[in-house]
Image (cartoon, rainbow, N blue to C red; front, side):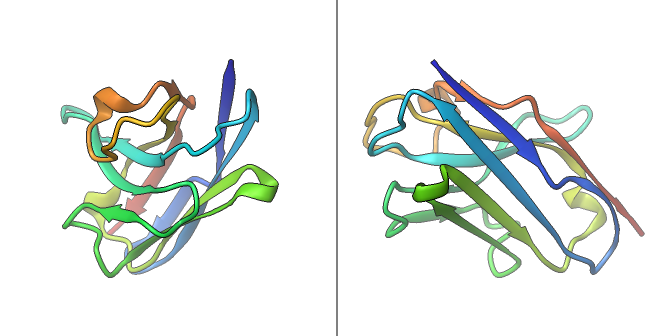
Amino acid sequence: QVQLVESGGGLVQAGGSLRLSCLASGRTLSSSVMGWFRQAPGKERELVAAISWGGSSTYYADSVKGRFTISRDNAKSTMYLQMNSLKPEDAAVYYCAAQGRSYGSMSSSRHYDYWGQGTQVTVSS
């Protein structure tokens, strides 16, 4: 089993920055894709960014390209999401997720087997 724990959420003014972290423990996520999802009230959960095991492949939603950066430190079993130039529309609960095996895709939430409990990001205008 795998446990994912997010941290780093909070309240920030529009234009500010936050850095989310996701610590993985339990079974080693060998060769696994990991990603950050978010869900705002009344909206569907959406993939924000994803990263391959080695970091050579990344995915970003169009809404965050150029503002968010995903990274991971496998030695520390930790994934990060650096969020800059935050907008009120970025406010949501952010979830860390990981694939349990290779699906050949990183963009579908159906392919993520493990989820964290979420961390709230609030952006004031």
